[in-house]
Image (spheres, rainbow, N blue to C red):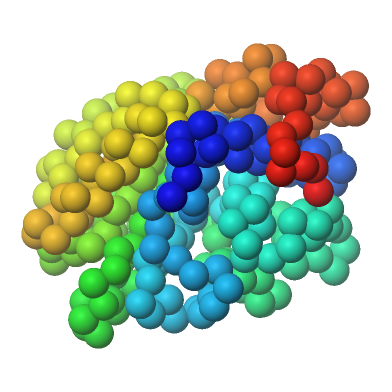
Length: 283
């Protein structure tokens, strides 16, 4: 287990990875990746029961994580590499020709840690439910986690899945929603107002909790531990993770500008100056 300070150090290095990867590739989605960094670091380094050295697609005997908003591959790949799923040096191939590190996760390239080809939004909750039911059928007491963007909740399939999970008591499933109120065309309020997400999920028979500051490592740890403690109590669990898109770089925060746009070399230098290199080192 890592201390909060150690996790914060990893998060800073992951943010450097995210920015360097996307600028080098001249494409990618840095905004949401930066905003969810604390959550991914906390999950992979302290909370998930996983075995990177012995990855299997089946995920038997360990927790499983499905990231539904697959465009945030920069944070997915960086945290997985730093956790030991594949060499950190491979991050330099992000979105390059022939890479395993595709712009959206691909199962065709046999990349350890990836169990779902995501990016077509709205599908991850359905996949997570299937995996959770599979664990129940095989008496596997480990949990299934999913991660979603709040804009993704404008997809109808999410609510079919939410209704199913609640009515079938899929209580080994924990779905986290990155609530940053930003999507590619503007704020979620402007594009299609999500209104009261807590009330919506509770109406579908879910337990719901909120992490007030999803960019505070201690709050993320405490909130996710609380969610894990709710597992096995007849209801699926939803975590509303309030984050800031672009967190960690002052000129990238709280705007959808960098949802799918990357920094040029000059702005990259400005950003990295705010994220000093750690002892982990750049790839």
